[in-house]
Length: 151
Length: 151
DNA sequence: ACAGTGTGGTTCGAATTTGAACAACCGAGT
DNA sequence: ACTCGGTTGTTCAAATTCGAACCACACTGT
Image (cartoon, rainbow over the protein chains, first blue to last red):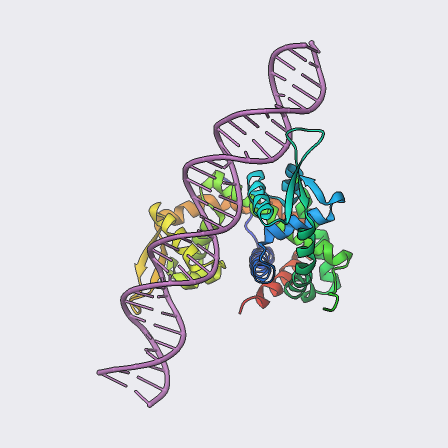
């Protein structure tokens, strides 16, 4: 059993920063969305992805992959959103097994009211804390990290 | 209702990268720890923090803050670790209400066997993907982000 | 000494998450 | 046309998470 390469001071700082920032930002966002829009972050993300998709609809499996969540988890959350009338399901015409999650007008409307507060929080917790140079590095570096884990 | 400042392309890329990288790295880590050591990431973090603390023990509330988790969540996880003999509780001598979580020898041993695999995964998913310059920016920037949310 | 406020940890119920199991279906190759 | 492997979405049980309620105690000021 060979001794592994431990993290040096800089690497440790990067790792801890990554963990702590991730936790704290997520936590703050969760709270803000719950308070101002009555949505959990996963739910908000579902609405956003649907709103960006052509026709406001995406297949369940495809959506689960984009959200980086399990299929069963998505089934649950879409169920919640459906009960509130923010999303509805539509059978896929070309594949009997397939199901589209579709953003309703109410969902689009709620998203419109929720988005400003959300963006403001994203700014004050992360974006506006950094300068352009740092944002560029973050975008490139973390983009690469994410990309490598898609497979 | 004034129009909020939306995110421009760079800001959006940084934000999405942050979210995706956070999710994917966390997910990968969780899986690796579960497979190789039978620990969840929160559990592993508890052991690490205890191992780094003088005497291998920390007060529950203090530990919850460091882990960025709720007190009740910590009570649960320490309970799990205690059942497995990796941690035990010790009453605080100076405050009857107080409880120390204490790392046992078994806990320290498991940590020793689990750490190499964990570090390897952290490297291949995040650290080794970036160069020194990027690590420095990440450490500084995310460190600042985390710091601002402590209050 | 005592009241009033705050703190430390646990308990409780409700919400969420995950993976495995499942049933139904698609599609390529023969 | 038919079979076999892979997909699709849901269901299920088990594990985890959070916040609110709670109890016992600490601490400050009078």
